[in-house]
Structures are given as structure tokens and as C-alpha cells.
Image (cartoon, rainbow, N blue to C red; front, side, top):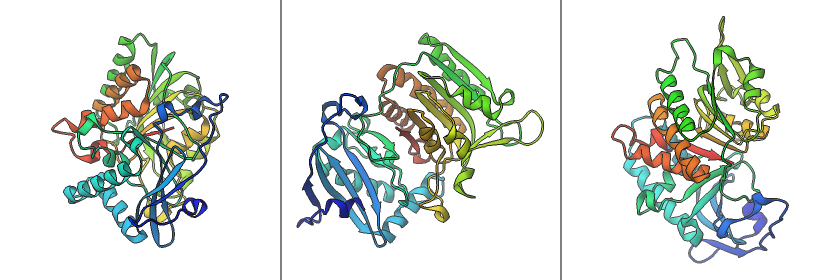
Length: 360
């Protein structure tokens, strides 16, 4: 475990601290550069009996939080229930999220700028965007947030201006059809067109699994995927995207096919249900669609990790693209999209915005 590897000694205040050698930037690897020293890596770690939250910045590793694992598992389950829209005490979760925010902020002064959270296998997830939103001055002081599947130190999710964009409308034609999928696609198309970026719209009925993956293989392209994901509730290899068929049943483009593809898109925004947060039966073995896309070579993946709202997606996805084109920072754009949802009367509930995550 990371905690034991660093052999962090306990302090009187319950925290831990140890200076470790800072890594020298390699000029050949620009993604290792830390812009202004703003990189704070956060590691959520569960053992057999205890959960620990470790933050690392500027060669300093410090324990921010520690609690019995059973308490953490219960907390993760309550957050998950809230994001699923179940009736639950949100004020209690807000209080918990604020406590976590303060604990992370106290770990290092740079925590005010942004967090890179490492998704650790076997650790049930919590909605980090909800915790980041507890900044005392609201969106004005909210840290940017990015997640990653490995512990390699990277700069925030910088993205290049696209040479072109594609909108893949994979909406099903059955009773599961998304009523606002066409509206979402047209809004994103308008954002790209206004900014002079060539954009194409492809419909799922005209795509095969191979042509779908080919559409995401062009370098320097931004991809907006609208449709239905499939969670890994029945096993990790079943995480994937549903592709509507002109005749017969929809086709599942599953995790192995996506991960094995050579995809070079700069950015994929996945507006689809099914990247679910954490299934209790498969904790530690679940794989996400976002992870498949990252393994395949996509530089930055934006997903709604809980059950996505069709109406909310038509609101936040064009806001994300508009902000991303201005800032060329996916984490900042996702933060702006979440803040936009929180200011509306219809989408204030965390189930609409707290699941919007950036993986790099």
C-alpha cells in the first residue's frame, strides 16, 4: 500500500507527513510538467480495516483523513444513493463533503488550485466534484478536478484546440430512446460551428462497431458521444456502448473492443448512462467505459459517471465545449459546466452535476 510504502509516521494531530524526493521534470515528457507547482495528487486507499486519504504535492506526502473502512464504505454508498436520485439527507452529505474539503485543503496550500485524484482499484468511489464544490466562496474558489487511473504525475487536463469535431448520436430507437438527444447534438454542433471548427454528425443506425471506433481514431479531434452505456453490473467486460441497429437488437461495443482499439482522439465527451459509480458486488474488479477509452489512447475523457439526465446533458454539454474552447482545459470546463447546472432551479440536485468527471 502507498501509505506503508512511504512509512508515514503518525503526528499528534492524527495526520502524517514525510518529505520525499521531488521528481525532476523530463523535458521529453511535457505531460509531467507541473504548471506553477499546482499539482496535488490525492490517493484514496482502503485496507482491510481502515480507509486513508493521502495527498502528495511538492515531494510532501500527508495523510488528510483516516477512518474505519466500514464507515467509508457506508459513506460511499450514501453518496451513490444520492447520485441515483434516492431520497436521502443531502444536508448531512453536504456537511461530510465540506469536512473532506477542509481536510484536503489543510493538507497542502496548493489544494486551493486543483486536485488530481487517482482512481485506486478496490476503493469504492465518492463524488469528488461534490466535495470540490464545498469551496467556501462557491465556484469562484472551487478547485479544478481531474481523475486518472495511474499515479504518474501529470499537469491538469490541458486539451488542444481541435482540428475537427464529430458528434456520434447513438440514440436507440426503442422505448429507451433519449427524447433530447437531437437537441443536445444540435447545440454542440452550433458551438463548434460558431467557433469555425468543422463538425460532422453521425447517427448510430449508420455505424458498425468498427466504424464507430474509427470515428474516434482521428488525432486532434474532439468527439461528442450521445447514447446509452452499459454498466459492468454483470462483469467488467460488459461495460460498453450500445449501438442501435437498423434491423434487430442493438449491438454492444464492449470494454475489450474499445480498449484494444487504437484511438487518438484528443477529447471524448461521453454523454451516456452506464459508467456507474461502484457496484457493490464487483468492487475492485469493475472496469469503466472511461478507462477503456483511456487505455485505447484517448487523451482526455469526460463522462457522467452516474445515471445521466437527458435534459441536463442538453444543458451542460454545450457549456462544457464552449468553456473548453476558451480555456483549453478540460478540468476547468467541467467545473464551469457543473457550476452552471447548480445555478439552475431544475438541476441543483447533485444527481445532475456531481457525476460529471474528467479522466486524463
